[in-house]
Image (cartoon, one colour):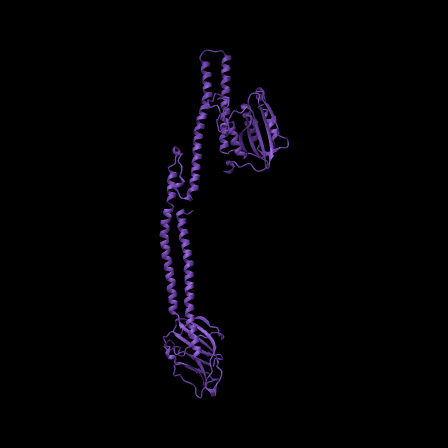
Length: 503
């Protein structure tokens, strides 16, 4: 199921806002976390450098050293039991390293593991020693002896030797680990995560409300347009949707609707005109039949007169049947319910064959006919339907040529098409009137004095049939009152599928 336009817009707004908020909050949190951890690590490193700078190797003593007066615990290994380290100032001045709850710890290790010094806050416990010794500070997350989360820095360095002139010696390599409680740091980061998450949720809820209002307001013109379309019916097809009344995004729809209404209006007008024309065309022959029968019945007549009356009625009925068959052909062509097969057709032979049906009528009117199509010119189309098209065009040329006039057919190849022209002299149409020759029942003589002889639907059939076969057609007036119907015939390709085949 396709979501409504409003739902799709709203989901797009919410999704886009959520993605942008996620990206923004992630950037803010990562940047802030990196900054506060950097500041915390900077503080750790400062403390570590300070402790490494103030510790001094006092060398070997006569007795094993006990706890220092400054509060520093030291421990000698079996290999050097009388060697000790001491600070240059009293570490009790930094209570965070002396109090069990101070949350800060340090521990020194000698490279060979023979010497270790702990902060009073450690007691007899040990900090985790980093693998290897490096003068480059190494930071890590750790669990402090009191069970809290902390961060530690490891730093390798050389102590300063004893300043005693009688016992001067070089310093020893030590590793220092300084660890501090980072609970406040992690608590702050946790608070920032919840703050950013809560703010994002609030913004999402607010953006949802704003989106509902914005989409409702923005889609109001569509509802107005829908009501306008709903108000259209067959009696007001002249209604048009003004471009000034709708947003620019709806202008293509308004243009399409206006064009559709124009086509519907034209279709309704053609239908009304067609119904009127059919009624008029049928009324005249029926009136002729009625008149013949009434005259025949007006008095007693011999069999010869009755037979003549019946023949006259029969001719009128045949003419009406021909018109009805043509109308049925138009209906089939309108619905595209025809099946066509493409064949290679020699145009000259086809035209010669179709002209035979009009040769006698052309002779009676003293018309000159010329088939100027060369033998080698061929096209690809349906032979029967193309023959019907040519027959209707030739019939029209014979009917409307002047007495003693001329009819000629020519063809030439143009790219992938064959241009076929059927021309006749004696045209009395204007350039404006020639645009209506393909309309059903249209004739220049509006009085319809020739009703029953010329139905005015032959060229309408030509137009519909060429559309079904994919043939281009146009009617033009050339110089010296010459009327020409031009066809653009394909040389290759497929016949457009009929609706019946598509269904």
